[in-house]
Length: 388
Image 1 (cartoon, rainbow, N blue to C red):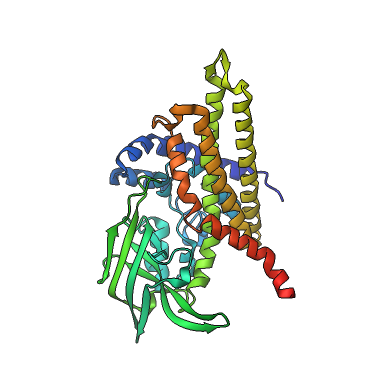
Image 2 (spheres, helix red, strand yellow):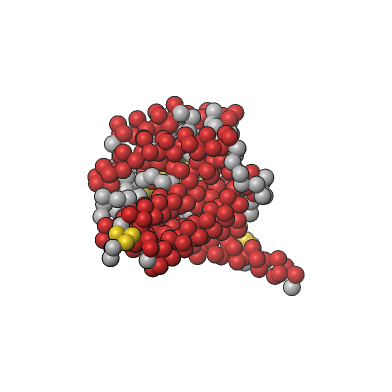
């Protein structure tokens, strides 16, 4: 394994770091206060990201993206992760599911999304189908060359500002050795399609300025040309996305933890109590040591998974380990950072209370910590079961 940075990678890190500090940090306090990102602010950050070549950095060069490899993209996302989530998300990394686009889908969805002319959102979660995706009730019924969609999705991130949705719906049933299972198909559905409505979602304490929404489909009729991938093969499309997004979550958790640790370290070195800096007290210095150790462990797991992905060798367990460790590490680091700062850590003059509050969702979305542990343990046990 080789994790040393090339000159190009270091240049990208320096560029993104400067972008975050100059273009994102100044807006954090306002977004946290009002819970919204103004259209003018969104437009300005997006234009700057496109100008600097940071927009759609994960997409292939042949389609107009930057074509970054997984390792470089992970390093970039670590830097972006230091900022308020809603602000950093403006620097879009479109879902790699869109690479399944064919024919006119490339022109109508993939290319405009890479250019920043359209924004997608992904709709999988339902009120009664979270981790158990196969239990989804939103259905797509075939009617000749069309499908009729019925059902509800919720917790759909940034659907309020998206132009279209990548929808996963049950499209049939197959018999398996373990009983009947629903077949899943993914579709591209434009906002404004009759029968498709978007409602405001829930008021989350995490990631202010980055909203969730509820999507309702009531006899929404779409053409078969809007299938993304192949009929009944929605899981094949989704699985390509899940590993990438879990690695992305892990990387952004690293960035946020680094910011929290920097604040805590500086505070410990300069804050004086009982006539000396509190860093000289073992109770504080050992916290810093534990925080740094956990952060390094999470970093190595994440970079290892990214390195393997650049060689097309990353497994589901690799991505799961990275997300599990990084998200749980962020919980520990943000909590200990606040403990070191004491009451000041909970004041909104500093970003610690936001980092602490935001971290909670990282152990839930894109697969809960329990799901990650299931993936990891199954990868260990399955070969042994096959030998019995």
